[in-house]
Amino acid sequence: MTPDKSVFGERTAMSDGAPIVAEVHSALSEFVKEAKGFQNEMTSRIQKQEERLTMLQTKSIQNRPALSYAAQETAPHVKAFDAYLRSGDDDGLRGLVVETKGLNTAVAAEGGYLVDPQTSDTIRSILGSTASIRMIANVVQVEATSFDVLVDHGEIGSGWASETANLTETSTPQIDRISIPLYELSAMPKASQRLLDDAAFDIEGWLAGRIADRFARAEAAAFVNGDGADKPKGFLAHPAVNNENWAWGSLGYVATGVAGDFSATAAADAVVDLVYALEAEYRANGSFVMNSKTAGAVRKMKDADGRFLWSDGLAAGEPARLMGYPVLIAEDMPDIAADTYAIAFGDFHQGYTIAERPDLRVLRDPFSAKPHVLFYASKRVGGDVSDFAAIKLLKFAVS
Image (cartoon, rainbow, N blue to C red; front, side, top):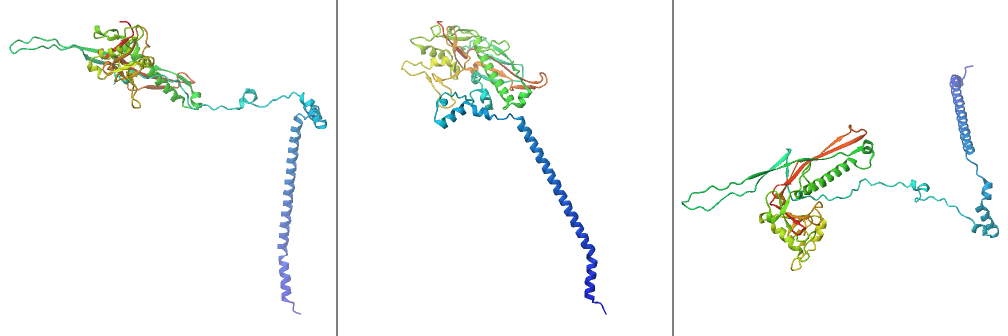
């Protein structure tokens, strides 16, 4: 009998695929085994982590002081409140002293330290007047150690000549030389390097601004009252004589007629006399110089018709005017007092010369004073009267 090929072939295929099925079954069993092992391992780790957290929590609770429930129950305010709720007895509440410990900013220990102040990013400085006769004087830039002004203040002789008469020799003008030496203004503040690094604002810029402002005020004072010893010579440092006896090398003055004040009957007359004591060629470019106190007294003056001699500037930045001439408020001028020269009038562009180097030098030195940084600033400037006929003074004296 011939075997059925289809049945035989099916059995053969099944017998041939048995190893493959066994291999797949073995692989799946191994995978399930490993998955279970991984699951068991993760379960063990989670359990250990929970045990560790429980242990830490237990230690934390043990280290904290236990709450005293008995103390709470016996606390005066608790007993008083319980009696009020149960029987309406409020005597305990009325006699209870309440201790308050609230936080506030008024007391540093109770919260004041917690309030962080905000610091300004700039430093406010006290304002100082820097108005100087530099604004009306002759300012020259030099590269030398001094500046010489040549002045011809003499007259050349002349005379009328006839057709046939012999000419006579006339006088020759003399030339004077006024030497204006340059002096050095200096400053050397210091700041720590840590402050420069950590400050919330520009320390170097602030110091530079303060140095420049101080230099401006120092030279402004010297141009008025400087004695010429290691500083410019101010115009008030020169000898002053009555204008009727004026001579080159001194400044002429006009007296008010009253010691330390204007005349009570004709106060404005002294100002008028001062203006016209100056020659016409200088008077055309004349300016008044005085401080604020003197300006306050002069501002009240009126002429014979009741009109104020003082007039404010009509435009922004324009100076006030006295009798039509500009007024420079220089706080370095003296106050009105006996025998003081509180007001000056003249053509300061002709009368006073300022010579200076064109730069303000600042040297930053981080090595000489460690851990500080030195800032050495210097400026060279000089000044002196260059025309004694161009400036007149008002003296608050009898004569």
